[in-house]
Amino acid sequence: MSTPVVPPQPASPATAPPKLTDLEIKDAQLIFGSVWQRLEEEYGRENLRFPKEIILLGGAPGAGKGTNTAFITHARGLTCPPIVISALLDSPEAKALKDGGNMVGDREVIGLLLRRLLSAEYHDGAILDGFPRTNVQVECLKLLVGKMHGLRREFYGTPLSIHFRQPTVHIMVLFVDEKESVARQLKRGRETKAHNEEVLRSRVGELMEDRPTDHDEVLARRRYRVFKDQTWDALQSLKETFHYHFINAQGTQHEVEQNILKELNYQSTLELDPRTVDRLRNVPVANEIIVHARQELVKRLDSYEFGQPELFGQVVGFIAKKILPIVQRHAISGAAHVNTEDTLLEDPIALAMLIDVFSERGFHAVVDLHRIEVPERFDVTTGVISCRIKKVFRIQIRFQGSEIRRG
Image 1 (cartoon, rainbow, N blue to C red):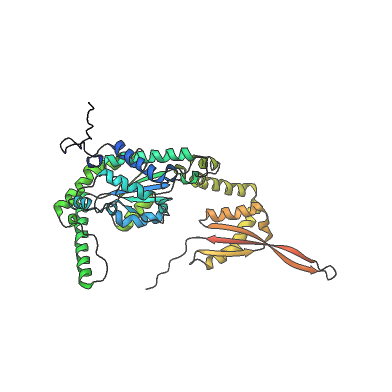
Image 2 (tube, one colour; image 1 turned 90 degrees about the vertical axis):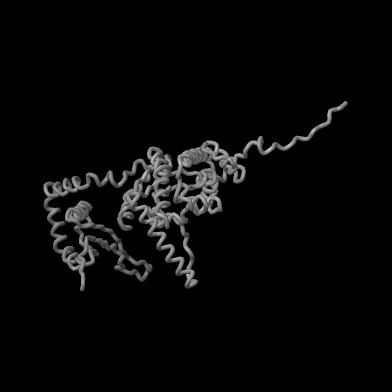
């Protein structure tokens, strides 16, 4: 007698294994691995083209991340809008968590973020506002950069290599203390409320996002402490891995912007592809040239005086008689242009002396030689025009002009 085949029965709710998406996953490898696998399936490895530069903008609540994003974008020459993590997470569940001063799950953040980074508009660079906020997100970031390096090696030397450049990651942390953070959050709440009331009254303009934490001091303090307990430690852990910039955001807007510029001084050697660095190795950076420039200038001027005093005297006399009167007439603008055909400057050493004298006196001098053909004779038989070459030295002198204030 044959045994009847019993179809498999669905597991009961009590014994059914929970779905991966239902778990509160804290394993970065598991979270990132599942997201990355899905991206490969959807896009294909050759299309996983992430930004060349990623700027992670983090900071305490009210530190000015939104306020300073446009300034940072301009400073780095980016044209794409920032990726605001809170704006990506607009589901009802995420909104409920945010309203309570909490954060959403890491899995949702990573999945949404990586898809947005693949947008073509972010190919050259992206600013992430509010990422990473947890240690899991930090580890996922490291895994992402590791994958980006792997893709670069995989496609290196192929026609697709330009899409997989050396990734650069900047961590920018805007910091204010708890007192300032709470004060700014509550101030933002008052301004948002007044703005929205006016929009509703006049029916002109758009409503601004109104966060419950901006109206409750207890929630505002809780939001700051969440930042200190979770996000702060997460960001600090990236110090040894990526370019790290700590920005004091306590001061005025101008002071904060100056702090940002100071931190973002461009150091291309740290960001260029190694092959490009090798190509540029024989070209010194500006700092290497100017570090001893003053001492070298002094040496040259003394060598002129003791080695070629007659020529040096002629150059100084030429400057005093021919150039300085024009410079003095342009003292307000701080820029003077002098054209001369004086044959003294045909000697390259004399020309070098002139530039060095102006440099030592605090001016910036630039000299261009223009050769102009001037007709002298016309042969009516052959139609040939004979010309002489007229040499015109165009000297530009720049300096700090005078500021005149009128009442």
